[in-house]
Image (cartoon, rainbow, N blue to C red; front, side, top):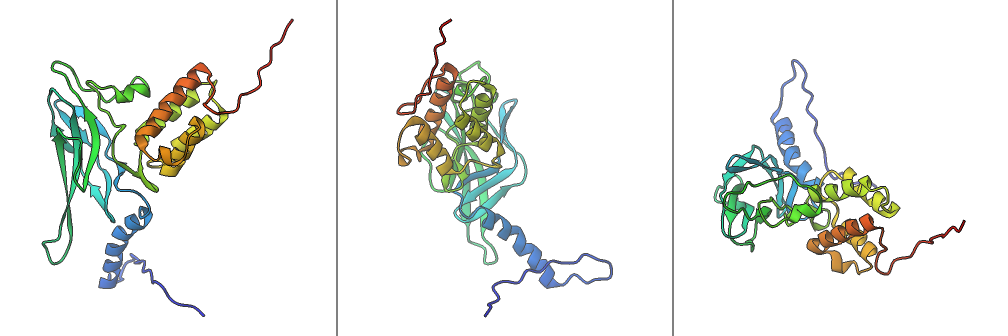
Length: 262
């Protein structure tokens, strides 16, 4: 017994063939269906792209993908927004507004804004935060992993709302920086190096449970404790510090050390 579930139509673009309306409908449906199927188990937030750069007195956001509810929204072109020095932290946010006023379609409108408030409404996603002092220049390049959360004059993406497999994740820029520093340290552990390779191979944000399990295992805590991405970032920072000093993890197994007497 068999049941037909779905029929896929692939147009043949050849000379003297008529492109029928059914073929056009297939092309239309596949475009949206592919993204929805691929990211259906991902959390809301940035899925790909949306990298940041400073161009004069503007912050530029490159093309990318964001997920809001079940919808995957495409930022087709670079978007820019002006900025200036301020007394407090500014939050660069992308808002996705759903518009159902038209009878023939649902519009998802994307708006870029700088806010004084960290708290976000539904459909608003943080891209970065920064506190620019008067007379200083805003930078997007980092000296190291810890430098990514520098409070002043630095674009901080450690709090950015990235959607990963299973929920909210860390920005790939953060996990890749961690991976590069682990791999550049010859004294780092094998488990850290293996995780670092995973970070570099991941196309988008790391799966949430992979980050939580690694942080919990390495720090000696519970998995649920590290479902908070800020705690994961703190764990990654401590792991790098320990790796640099050759320290042991809390509750971890000590390696045998040999003393050779001549």
